[in-house]
Image 1 (tube, rainbow, N blue to C red):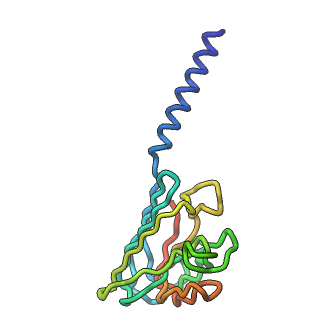
Image 2: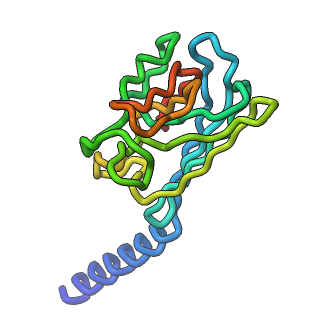
Amino acid sequence: MKKIIFSAALFITILIGCKTKSNSNDSKNLNLTFESKSNSTVTGTATFTEKKGKVTFVAKLSGLKPGVHAIHIHEKSDCTAADGSSAGGHWNPTFKKHGKWGVGEYHKGDIGNFTADEKGNGTITLTTDEWSIGGEDETKNILGKGLIVHQGTDDFTSQPAGNAGARVACSAIIK
């Protein structure tokens, strides 16, 4: 009987040890494609990579008008409306005022602005521990949300969404 208990305990120890080791090296990845909205020609991709408790987001877009554009995470992973309105408002699980990421109050979806060059291409990168890919904390979990690119610039002050203009591209944040 002692031998069986010892074997079971050893098995559980080995299993836990393997699981812990595997989790420290695991990363989660999402690769998304944007759909054009509001009669735009904007296309592109986005990736979310979670590793060691941090999520790195990279979006690469083309077909934009040269200049500054806003990008936000919205409440719903629904891009069916022609104008992107089906994605709802900004994702704001902590009920904060709209603002600039990392400064005072801001929504978890307030990613910010990026610049499109003279050819209409733009890239933005953000790394944060305020998001997760499928985590249990719903104030961090980005799955089931939408990613919206706006025609204009987020002014970081207008409530509730920064007055960034039409939604020119949308992607559902889903596996």
